[in-house]
Image 1: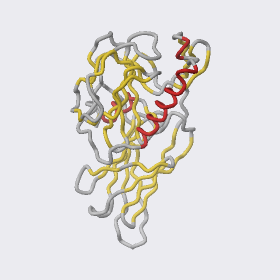
Image 2: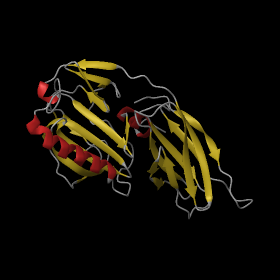
Image 3: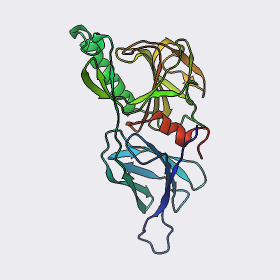
Image 4: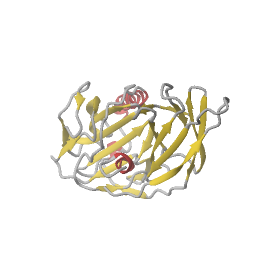
Length: 284
């Protein structure tokens, strides 16, 4: 995949002890807009001091990539408003503030016709829907505290995405939540691959997303692969990158066979294509 990455300038901190080295921060991203993933690279003054990052009122896990180099994945949720947001980095006694200037992004609208039961579910299904919503909320909040992925992220299917992340959806004439992933118009039965290594935390049928697999890549990064016809993995299983997790289907709220891929980064909803742009095979 080719994408023009935005390389941001280095930010320096001021320390209380004169002569100490500051924290250095740089960032790269496809763009600085809602739904984008930003990769921060942080170089603290001392190799022994861990790095702590906070942005958008969330703690963002940082991970070491070199003797004195750390990185952190900052997701800009699709509902973030335009403006300047502070990213705070702390290491030992050192502190730095990096400013992300989030630009405005306009999302398109789409109108779809689906089974009415997925627009206005029957009351008998409401307890199930509430249980599954609670399951997903708990899943996003309890990631593995270690990095489980390695190397580049890959596309789960070969076909290109055919719907835009963040699209405002109108089902059967009724507005619903924004589209928080990317859809790939793959034929039914197409093998679906894990975008990277991780642990399966959900592998079961869900009311709206049908047969669903959620992979915890660690440190707050998740992949959700939905509407599968078949699930080929089980909850708790450790996966390698590119391992087959199931097959494309048309289960749940769909208009036809396709793969839906959602990415969460520290509970921020980000475009999977942004993830591929900054952490995919063609990324720096």
